[in-house]
Image 1 (cartoon, rainbow, N blue to C red):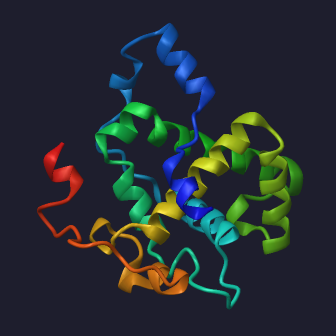
Image 2: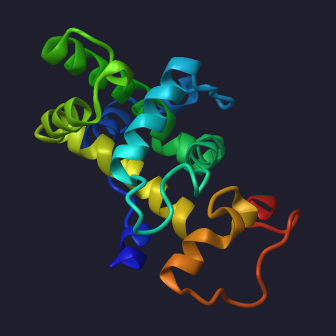
Length: 179
């Protein structure tokens, strides 16, 4: 099941429609997007909700998921897909929902309140797509070779009892080096 998730990156319908109606809009997305400290903190909290420390394997922080995500958002293909802009926009939606529901920023909420806000966001098409996209990148951080920045010390592989393929990519010889 996890393998099928990584093969199917969620399609963000609104973004695809916007690109079709206004070609060239992806050129307005900064190539070196850097998440703000507040956005990093929020995404880290969301990732920990999606992949928590529950004693049943590595959590999002064990997998270096936030750093992996930031690196993945620099990939030209992901920029072209609109992923960085969509993830940043989703941070605003989530905080707005947290403010409306609990009069507080998402990161200041209890774990139970965060879960409620995420469930509220997931009830909308855009929110469901946003959470699916974050889950997609979390799954990549779990299963990709550590050379790409996630799956630190092969924690994901060990948890899944995965035997990596051979030869494994090395620094300087990853798919990004050949694009």
